[in-house]
Image (cartoon, rainbow, N blue to C red; front, top):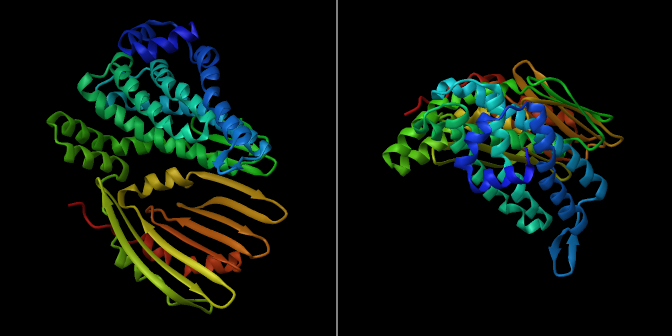
Length: 402
């Protein structure tokens, strides 16, 4: 495979190039070696140069990411982005029968790998930090390439390719968030270990592990929404298409009413009196969220407590944020832990001197509880979470879908 010719072909003549790729006798290892290892480095190197060497700013002021931190971030992002291609290929292969296609692990890997070409190439713009946001154009064209490639490599009908592509696109978005979480959390040399169903990153500061099998389960749940998106696209109903797309993210569920969540926020916590209370609900494109917040404090201490429900997207929120990630890091001054307690996921992030801290819990039903404060210790933050009665919130039933 000639790398330059393949890049030109898939970007400029995708309809002619996909059948060529389908007929090629190759392996996952050879695609990594001859194609992905090279192209995936483009956005990573460009971003490192842009943020750590050039910097961003104006009026004579330039802000740069420290060199060491930039290098660590680059290495982590590079490794995890390569791994993401394989994980997404598992999803594509698993979903093939649901969209009238044929399972084929190698072809699934091909279609994901070569669809990423546009994102990799456009990533060169990150060398100028202000242009890095244009990377979205590469992602959008990549989805178009995927849309053209799925019928050829996975043998699905063209009329089902829209829904198929949309589901994979959402999963890709979630995976990219996970990459950001991991790359931002680990700040030391690392080593990737594990198999496709489990990813782990070991460092002297701790271990981060991801259960990627959750991705496939989430994809299955969004399959029905994907079918509705197909129908809306076919009928030309843009409003229905927008709602269907939102349902893919939200799962089409209705969140618990914000006023109901508000009732769980106590008037005081360990002597800290509540001095503000608010509740709000928002909805757009079929995506809904309810939030209740309260602030507490005295002359020296402050604490903020919130309850958030994304309705049917609770599981997706957990996956995208950190509910399927575990880590344990400690320095001389701070501790950060992400761990499981039954079906709940908990995150502690605090300074040992009690100057700042945060404690978050994602309940089994996807509702997120968060307490953060200044001049309060982790024990008080945990007490704040207990004060809202997590067991009762977890047992709440969401309103039936209209």
